[in-house]
Amino acid sequence: MQDLKQTIISYSSRNLEQRKNWYSPAAEAYNKARPRYPQHLIDRVVEVAQLSTDSKILEVGCGPGTATVALAKPAVNIPQLGCSIICLEPNPDFFQLAQQNCQPYSNVEIENTSFEEWELKPFEFDAVLAASSFHWISPEVGYPKAANALKENGYLILLWNKELQPSYEVYQILSQIYQLHTPSLDRYEDQETQEYILRQLGNMAIDSGQFKNLISGQFISEVTYTVDEYLTLLNTYSPYIKLDPENKESLFLGLRHRIEDDFGGSLQLSYISAFHITQKVTSEVRES
Image (tube, rainbow, N blue to C red; front, top):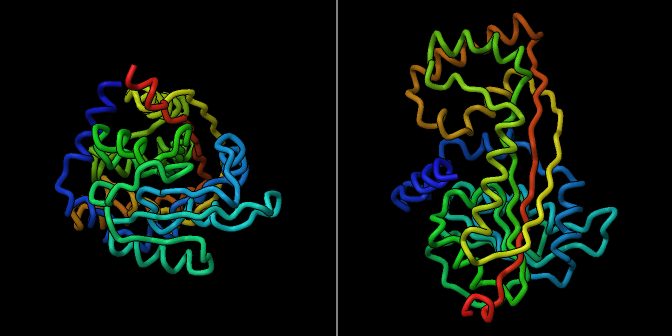
């Protein structure tokens, strides 16, 4: 747990302006290549957090609106859904993409600001949502401010899509390319490791003292990415964003040739989508 907390603190302790613009070089790629949240995960979140068309949600770091659209639009099997959502997105490029993606939904309002800078509206929201974004905010700021924005017994909803992974056998072949060009990026997270990280992320909300009654769930999805889609996806992960351009070019060229020669130009990938839902600890309990 301590290692994960330190990693999160290292992200969140970066200069706020740096964090605001971190994904700018990869914003379009992120919008195109990052996977969506499976509908059955969204359905379960709606059920557990008791969301409806009357629910008012604050979304922290909406990115290009990946999760926003899923909750803003009426679903075939949940026609009454279509929550009112106020989204906070500090990155100017993500902000523009979110505006485009959410344009059909009049129930969505997007503000180009960070959660840290946002002027708190106490006890106003039924749920605070963060989709693969809450680790960018200091735990000392994030959990208390989220709790203060919630109505009594409101819910904190954390969604996660873990990194897409090929099978271990495929990874071992691609590993040769990484060892040749960028050994520091040669890593593989198996399902057990990813599930352990997800458990830690959920427990951090409880350990903050602001939330209770953790409910978790996860789903595994299988997808096929062409070599172009896969390289675009890699461009959206932080270690690749900060990679020296020359090293990245040689690495990607090596990966492209290997995927085309050994795997017919595409890869089978899998990823874990998960949710953590916790309920705000009432002020009476916190004070006692």
